[in-house]
Image 1 (cartoon, each protein chain N blue to C red):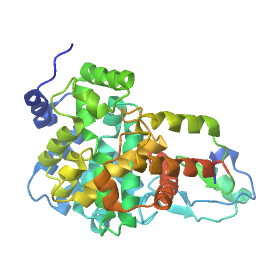
Image 2: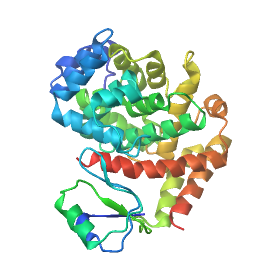
Image 3: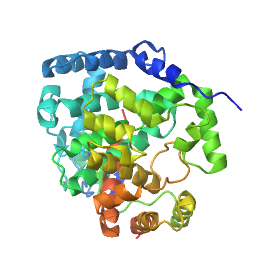
Length: 99
Length: 280
């Protein structure tokens, strides 16, 4: 899923999440393929927030930095079996975000 | 060494939160309504509807993907019917303390929203009937920090610095500066606002879950949700390191490594939804 601002929308993109108006009512459903007409309407609506389309988002922080930060956060917990389990789960999860 | 701020003084500030200059008017008004005994659905709904900004935010929140009803709740009364009065009270408070939290500590709101979502996810996994209650407990678990950081800014900055240099949890660092920790003060506030015992216990004992006698399960959920949010590095709660999980609380929830990976995954989805809610 990629987060884009309304001005960056391109025809052919597919919505990964519904487009909502200001109070959160759905205007266009998930899975809708965007046409020029839809894009123009979305741009006219002064929506707040971003539009989510299908695709994969580039992660802002490199994986090794994310894992190094995780190590630092768990530095006082070494040797605690339950904390080790939580840390392993976090590592696995973070790793998956970069696959 | 600086003096420890006495319990009496801390509790006095909490008791008088309605007249603190740092607290915005909406929150004061809301707090007054919540302190009333047997506040009715109509009273809450009409109060919220008198404030367009508040109405807007609460509807945006309940319609976000964080909840189970995206895009389907059109009014405050409808939200109360679906979510229950206590949950709506908690959410109202949650959205009203947003600015206050941002001012008190950068990242505290993101941490609170993350913890709320994680608590809800765990509650659902455990089959609790009202996972939203855990969401609210997660959202408000650090409310004590808001009062401490806003009313005793210097002392709280001291505690934050102490926690960082000594590599100890903020909860422990608070002891050097405050007679009561943030969880205790949050519990006092929760009682003052007549939140149900379940919520008060979860807030009061989120760092010491074995002390929760009435609602050990909900308290354990908020305790673990807090730790998982810190483990994932969402927002900032004053802790540079992840506090050690309580053995009994962790074992009570019977979650495997796989289950926790799942919680993190679901949490990821709600982070994006949270960011949308925050963009006002």
